[in-house]
Amino acid sequence: MAAYGLYTHIRSNRRRSIALLIGLFFLVFLMTFAGSLVAEAFLDGRASFDEIVARAWVDLIGSAPFVAIGTALWILIAYRFHQSMIDALTGGHEVTRAEQPRLYNLLENLCISRGIPMPKLKIMDTPALNAFASGLNQKQYSITVTSGLVDSLNDAELEAVLAHELTHIRNGDVRMMVIAVIIAGVVSFAAEIFFRIMFRGGMRMGGGSSSGSSDRKGGAGAAILLAVVLIAVAWFLSLVIRFALSRSREFLADAGAVELTKDPDAMIMALRKIENRGELDGVTSAVMEMCVDNPRAGFEDMFATHPSIESRVDALVRMAGGRDPGPIAALPEPIDTDGAPEADATHPEPPHQGPWSDPQPAPKPGPDQGPWGPVRGG
Image (tube, rainbow, N blue to C red):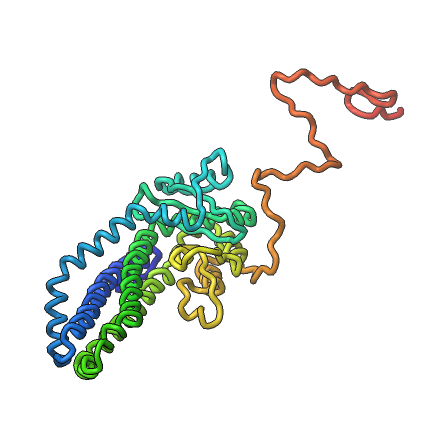
């Protein structure tokens, strides 16, 4: 079904996401089948290719419940501890209104305007400019922003970034991305174990005798080759699915931020300031995939999880009527986090007066002054 507006795009994207996540589960069973092929090939190296495939299929059917339970346990563990692992990896720590009143109030106002429960707010101490949302349910949702982002963006731009991440939570993107990363992690883990066994222990298993090695040149060798191909395909498809889940969602999150703030120029300026300044040192690719921007260039851009800043800005200009200042070579001075301009030494502020302050004596008129101004000569 064609999508004609923001909300139909969101629904369409959710349907595609569910289909892709179901595909990821099938990849786990594909990996299991590949492992069964290898096991049967080594157990009976003289069997024909068709016999090995048939036995591997029976093994897959018998092990399917255990594979499903194991995958569910993996997801359950990640469901419970994924946020702690992300915080340990990034160094993000939760902040309160007293610690970050400017940031906290901006997020709270956005949540109040849409009747959304406020997620946890966290700060990651790094000069990089980026932010990400994480969590699998309402109690776990959190938005993490870098200290560099807070220092470099004004209130309108910072609000746009927070609205972008809040939109990811509203649309269910965060939940989908975390689940996709979890299941893709199962595929990557199984692939790594398989190849370690093959290339470290497999040679010893197949090289015990010259006759055993020659026996495996027939059906067993073909079965092992098929298993390697299946595992490589499963690993590659898991990456492609992760990219697909993230790439199209950034446009929707940008649009959602504009819908919340009614300020496309702020979202554009935020993206231009973040451009080429968002790389988080020491974090995994899984975390970078959840960020506002995941900078990649050259050949790596073919496998980027995010569309380019240029294309996102272009979409905001065309669809939301924003104005693009172009790439920003150097950022302005850091924003005063107190939100108030520094006092000018040449124009000191008058002493604070309250309703119970002592009255200040009025200046006495000079010889040429009357009570309402200068005395004009007659």
